[in-house]
Amino acid sequence: GVPCLVPNIPLIQHIHPVLTITVDGASEEISANIGLAECERAVHTHDDDAAQGVIHVESQDRRSYTLDDFFGVWGKSFAREGYALTVTADGTAVADPATFAFKDGQDILMAYQRE
Image (cartoon, rainbow, N blue to C red; front, side, top):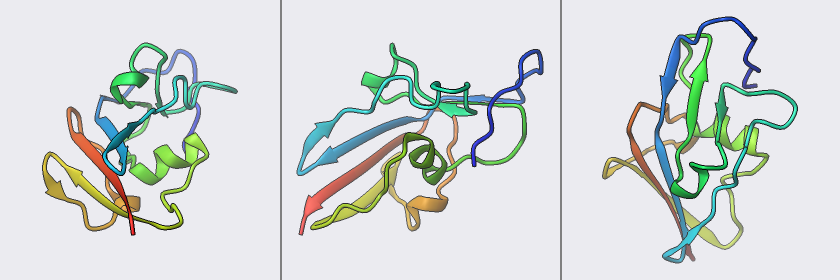
């Protein structure tokens, strides 16, 4: 899983990809304060950035964090019955969304279309 940050240990990574989710062309909200309930997770959102889809990757390790990590912290699944999913990053198709690693400033689009 995604670790909690330890107080007084410096961050090694601090990046901010931007995620947009659409369902049949309509924007879907990304919740505020994902990953901040019981502790501050290395992957989270803040209340002031969630509406714009900003994901905060602030970690004390060098591992790559993925869309799967974010959805795990959020408690959601990629799968939606009756929908096909297309994922792009900076306009380029993503082959495997689960293992797709975040980079700073990426624009990621997850588009669900009714089958």
